[in-house]
Image (cartoon, rainbow, N blue to C red; front, side, top):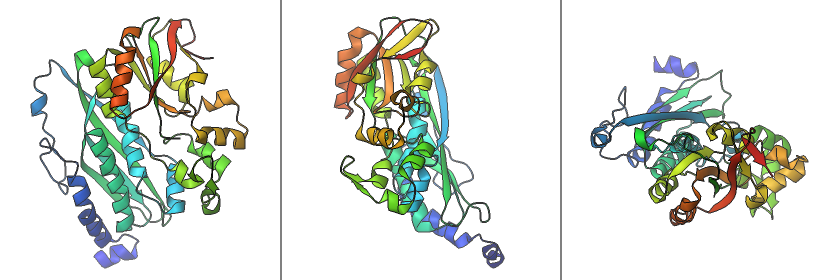
Length: 342
């Protein structure tokens, strides 16, 4: 039967080899709360040690890596996109003050190459370790005739937990609050349809060395998305955070308003956002207006936090001690428009 399945394009033995290869990577993320190993129909995670919370709330998030995967496939570099997948999910739940508990991934391929799948999952596991969550399961689907050989898609899902009294949802934001940006590592995992159109997504274009980027174009663009979970936890311990926006697709223009209450406006001084060289390269080569760039990309700030002015210094110190670069980029004022870039 396996031979007939293989003739149809699905190699079950490659699947067995993939599971064998990724077990070690998966196990490296486990903690005492993980109650089952890889291979079960379902994954088990104990919430026993969270019983001291007054009202525990679960917060979930799911996302993919998008067309950034095209670059990974073209350059045959697969060990970074797993971190991207984790980051896009865990950063979202971290915006609400939640600690990610566990993560599941979904990898769909045209043809399963175990060594490639291992690289991808190794990146997922690395991202989970950075976020302090366990990679407790997932799915690898070989789909011949649906995806071309050599191509794949990658998505993930996470669940985090926070005491309801500690939930961050933007409702506490007030006029006069200060906005802090936390530095990004690059383009992260949004806007790559435009990036590929401007920079090219063939091997020749991606292999060009850029002195401005300090690397080849492809490797610079594949820099994985920064994971902010531990930084957010450090910031919460240092001061009262009123709101957090993850700057993903839609940039500043669409993401910051998601946390701003009616009648208030986040006034962002773009000169105070340290724009990374990669964005200037994309802007110039694509002849893209600067304000449009802020409506697409993170421009150098992967997260924006709002807080009372009295907490700013302590929070910035805490963020820096956690390994992040943080900077004041604006204030909250009374206005009808929820975000204004000046």
